[in-house]
Image (cartoon, rainbow, N blue to C red; front, side, top):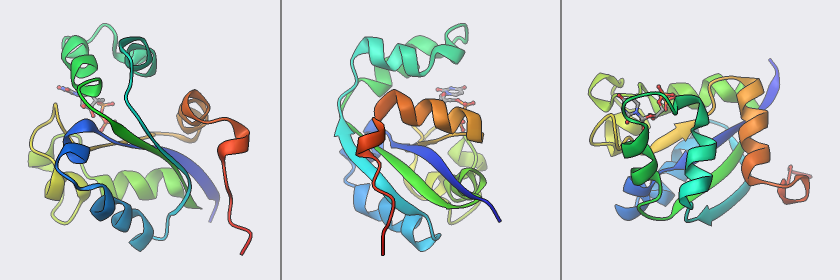
Length: 143
Ligand code: UDP
């Protein structure tokens, strides 16, 4: 099993509903270690840059408006197969299709406001981590 790092966001809807702790609990229960964490209120430019790959999609404007609508929590998770492990506990993009017991099934209301983001591959995780964190901000466990 490979030890990987992945990038995660608790989106404005879940922060507004006071689900930060409950979602952190899901990460830790799944064996993922939070090795960096902070709250951010994204600017328009930051949100557009983060979701640049979706800039031609019809929902892009609404996605940027949503992601700038309130504070978010950004974190780096580390663990065995962390990218896939986090995608599994997140559940499908559309909470109506997410497996029972997943974060999106339990905490999200719609495909637009779906509680969490998680990297979809190791390469995108590296890019997304670097978008929000300096190397000095990463705190791997020493005990
Ligand atoms: N999204 C949306 N409407 C859609 C599809 C996606 O608002 O029809 C948003 C949603 O917040 C989603 C994000 O765009 O999480 C990125 O979409 P992607 O397909 O990459 O899903 P994810 O990787 O987040 O599951």
